[in-house]
Image 1 (cartoon, rainbow, N blue to C red):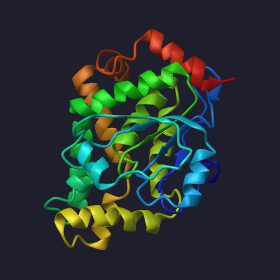
Image 2 (tube, rainbow, N blue to C red):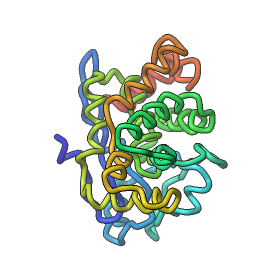
Image 3 (cartoon, helix red, strand yellow):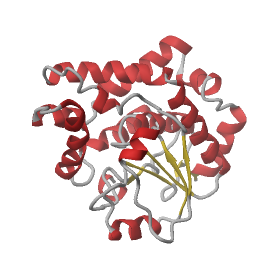
Amino acid sequence: MEKSRVIPLDGVHNFRDYGGYPVEGGGRVKSGLLFRSGQHLEATDADLAGIERLRLKHIIDMRGASERSSYPCRRADTFSASVVFYDGETAALAPHVEAASGALDDAAVHKKMERLYSRLPTREPVLWIMRRYFELLAQGDGATLVHCLAGKDRTGMAVALLHHALGVHPDDAMEDFLLTNTAGNIDARIEAGASAVREKWGNISDSTIRVLMGVDASYLLAMRKAVEEAHGSLDAFLRDVLEVDDKQREALRLHLIEA
C-alpha cells in the first residue's frame, strides 16, 4: 500500500495520498482526494503536470509568510486551485529547523522535536490554519493538498487529527505519519531540507540532518499526550479548539469515507 500512496515527483518531496485507511464502523477513507507534501520550490515541469492531473481544488499551505517568501511554490500555467494560508508566521521557524538550534547530538534533537510537537497544539497561528483545513474538507469540494515546508510536522499533526476525526485506527494513523521516513527519494528530500537548516545554523552534521528531516513515533505521541493533558481527549480538542463539532465531523465522514 505504501508504494501506491506515494506520488513520485522529482522536485517535490513527501508527496502522497493519505486516504485509503479503514475506519471504525466500516468503510475506508477515500483515495484520490487527500494529498500531503513538502514545499514546491523546486518542482519540475513534469512535477507540475503530474500535480495538475490530480485536479486539486484547494491547497492548504501551513507555512508562515517568511517560509512562503523564501520557498515560493512553483505552479503550472493552468493552476486554478485556491490556496489558503495564514497571513503571518505559523511558527518562528519550521519545527525541524527550530530543533537544530544548539543541537549537540542526535538524542538531543529527538528530545527537542518531542518538545516542539508538544507545543504545536498551543500555537494559535497553527490552530487557525488547521481550522481552515477542517472547514474546507467538510465542504467536500474536490481534492485537497495540505503541506508545510518539509510536509511532516505541522502537516503531520493536521493529518493525524483528521484521521482521528474520521475513525482511522491510531496504528494506521501512526503508519501514515511514519511514511515520511520511507516515501520517495529520501536522500534528495534530506538534501533539500539540509539547505534550510544549514542556512540558519551552519554546518550541522549529516547525521543530525537525517534526524531533523525524519519523524519518530515519539513525536506524534508527544503531541497526543499534550492535547490529552490539556483538554482531556483528542475529541475534546477537535471540538473545543479546532471547532470540529458533531455536524462538521458528520460532514467530514460523509464526504471522505466510502463503503
